[in-house]
Image 1 (cartoon, rainbow, N blue to C red):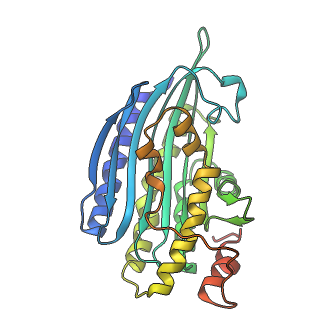
Image 2 (cartoon, helix red, strand yellow):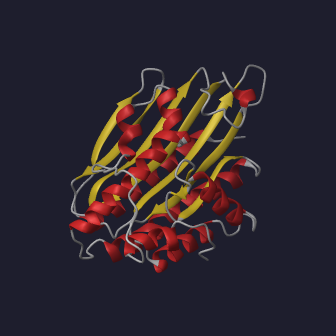
Image 3 (cartoon, rainbow, N blue to C red):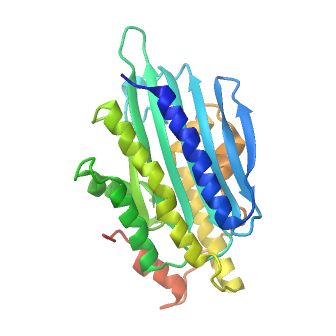
Length: 299
């Protein structure tokens, strides 16, 4: 038996707690934008722009449903395509202004499909990943350790699997490079009973503030110049490329008639692209590629 009402209550509470924690750091408030989806469902977008710390960010809750499961959601389960479906989740992306403070993404979600005369097919998904512009080993280790700790007690195989899944998922194939230093990622997760799967997903969601806030507070006031801001804008272009070309959540939202403003909330506000640019050898910018955009065991 599943309990969608309890999942929804948890997700709404998670959204509120994360927003409260990020407002404490920033000093400015997120705006609240509630919306309805004509095809079914709706959501609550909590957004900050031009804050003291965050140049742009959002912590979104959505609960949507439909009668024809789109291809992006059925990519790994083609037999479910066309079913009636229901999805709910919290998804966030935070873009600090300071180039030394990393961008972060987190998502936890619950999906159910229905077919006449058959048991519902449900699964959880989610995870979090860190995208620095200037890397710090202590930040990467802290983030990965917190992700690992969130999975303790749910199976010793989960962290190695989810860490590898994150490395492989958040990878720009056309660039042959990682988006950031990774974290954990999982999808289509129902290999444990509902209560256990839900508890694991809650543990991941609850770990987000512990994983990110200490890093943000260490870096948000770091001195920087226009050089670092320029490089940040260049690297943000990779973020845009991944979200538009590869991200399953973005594709699902757009294909299912989701709310465009909320789906594209993840986009950074200032971005640059350059033709065939490479960093100066042995520079801090070059070390991002050599020391951080590589798949390795941080903990």
